[in-house]
Amino acid sequence: MVVAATVVTALIIAVGLLGTLVPALPGSILVLLGVIVFGAVTGWDAWAIGITGVAALVTTASMVLGVRIPAKATGATASKRSLHVGILGGVVGFFVIPVVGLPVGWITGVFLSEAAASDSATARRSTLAVLRSFGAAALVQFGLALSV
Image 1 (spheres, helix red, strand yellow):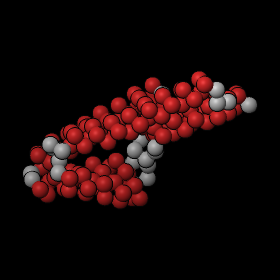
Image 2 (cartoon, one colour):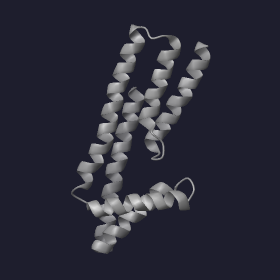
Image 3 (tube, helix red, strand yellow):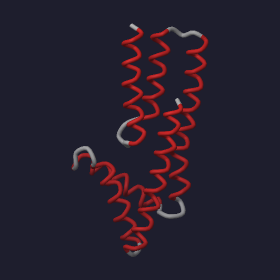
């Protein structure tokens, strides 16, 4: 029973780690879920409860930083309208292009919105700044998920 729980937990955590890098999966939450499943199967002793509590705190910090880093960095480089158009482009891309449509549509939406508001060089700089900020947030979430 413990071996099966360990394998299932490892799979959930592996998918969660992948999810911190792929925007379509709730990565940090899956990693926490893996810790909770393992604690539930092995018995809720004091260590399991303590580790799950620390994992929940780290997951919360990961999710907060995953939102705050891009919000702070993109505020100076891209308009909120561009980010909203990027979200709309990501939704359209998700349904039009299998697997990679969400990020492709999001990037395209941000670029086109910025290009409509200014010249293409400014749009390119703004889009690259937005990509860097979201990439930094993904790396922070991945690192914190690894620490869990």
